[in-house]
Image (cartoon, rainbow, N blue to C red; front, side, top):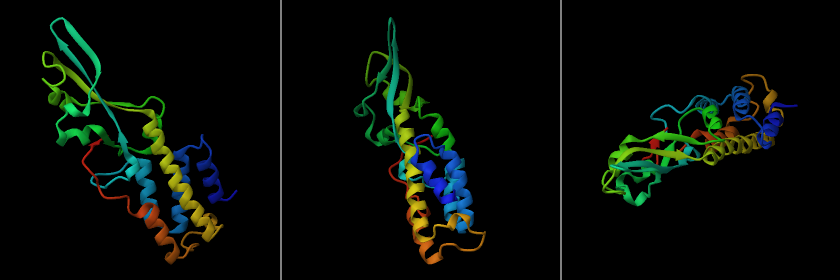
Length: 207
């Protein structure tokens, strides 16, 4: 089976391991001679460095929770409505920029992630329950958000590989430095899928 078909098959199956797929893409990037594609693969495998903007699919929705305590009373895991958070801080707690490598994302697919946010607790003092102290605050990201992230990576790879196959079905087996797809055709494809991961949007917290 050709490298291109192997990547396609792995992207198309629910149990296709995205880390393994990306490693195969690293081989493909070398054979295509694309530094931009190779760089995207490295970022997905090992994490996005600061201050490199992340793709939109790495902005994950989150929900806020907090514990409250007073003399004789305790309220655990209370859902925090965004309306009680000052407007200038809402985006930070509503979405999370996931910068870690893809293996970390797959580890959270089942149960999601919980991230402590002590600064949120400070903002909630005297807001939800004026007679109670906020003694802990955090955000939760559902497993489905991470599942969507992994799916987005697979979809992007699959679309790109299909375009490469249309140009040259044997591109995955090409010798190094042989330019199996001309630069005139390759560069627009790489730019479209990987060359510009996007400008940083509204401020959100980093994972």
